[in-house]
Image 1 (cartoon, rainbow, N blue to C red):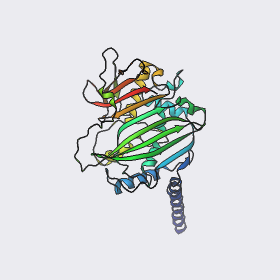
Image 2 (tube, rainbow, N blue to C red):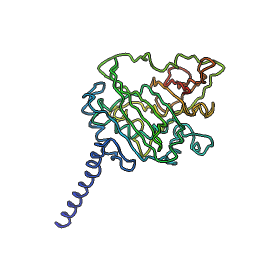
Image 3 (cartoon, rainbow, N blue to C red):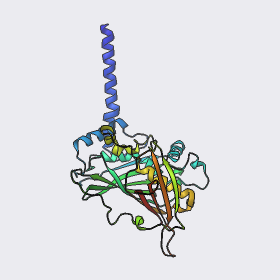
Image 4 (spheres, helix red, strand yellow):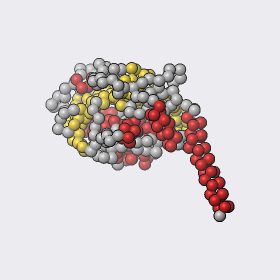
Amino acid sequence: MGNAQSYIVASLSVCSVYLVYVHVYCAHKLLKTNELHSDKLPSNAYVYMKYLSRRVTRRAGCLYGTEKQEAVYTVVSCRVEDALLRRFCSAAGYGWDYPDSEYRDIPLCFPEFLCGRLLLMLLTHENFRLSPAGLVHVRQSLKTFQPIDELKKGPFTLRVQVLGYQPTDLGVEVDICLSATSRFRCVVWESVLTLLSENKLHKAIRCSPKNENESEKDEPAPDTLKQVELKVPWTADLKCRWSFPCQVLSLPARLFRFTPHIAPSLWMFSVCLAEIEKHKGVKVITAPVTVTAQFKEPLVVPGKVTVGFWEAPGNKHQSQSFCFQMQQHGGGKAHLVGRISRC
């Protein structure tokens, strides 16, 4: 009996040491470097432990440290997986058969979907100066320089980087750049996310900055306005092996408080672009193109929304552009407004 107990204790000890080595020590060493290989990423367990640690030790809306070193991660030798692309298209408004359709490029938001895990790693980086908990997605500017299908032609590189911090009346905003570079070292896709860390001690009224998306000022003309009613499913989360759920930014609030289930901003953005492509054709979003968006009110699921889009007013010498919005079913508050412009 004594030998059996000793054997069990020894086995448990070895297993514990192995788990600590694999999930903690190796992950810690990997995150000390800025460039990683797609097959050797830190374990989800360790990254999430860092996330919880930062959440406990840092207060939202406060800027910590100094900008001595930048927060950046690069992952090389990435490849597009057909099964993953199909899963994204099915969940993000394109339909499960989208990748098999002719003359269709990879959806504009797919690279952002791939950057999900990298983004969480960046938010827990030792040089990231905000609490990663409770960050609110307020604005986004997406650009394509080449067709995103270029990423299918070989290994590509994903990169996430903090561009800067801006104190506001509501807290602190941070601009984060996501990019995808082809095997020929040409930037194919780039997106700048603006996240807000709200200071709960300030009871300021959220208002739109002057430089935010101006598409909300463009009144849709009756002859060009197209509206589509959509159901918002419970399963609006977009998940992949690269990332945690897209709602990870608000996950602690859902775990420790009874809060409504909110649709991810990535889902709202992608669904709008998918509906525009279905009704206006793929040429509207063919590279090179710039898409700007402003996220207004959170979207509670399940429910119904109305996606509207129309030709933006402009002179005859300008390239055709479109405005779009997602609003509460039956009118009312807008959840998202945006604009598509030809570069």
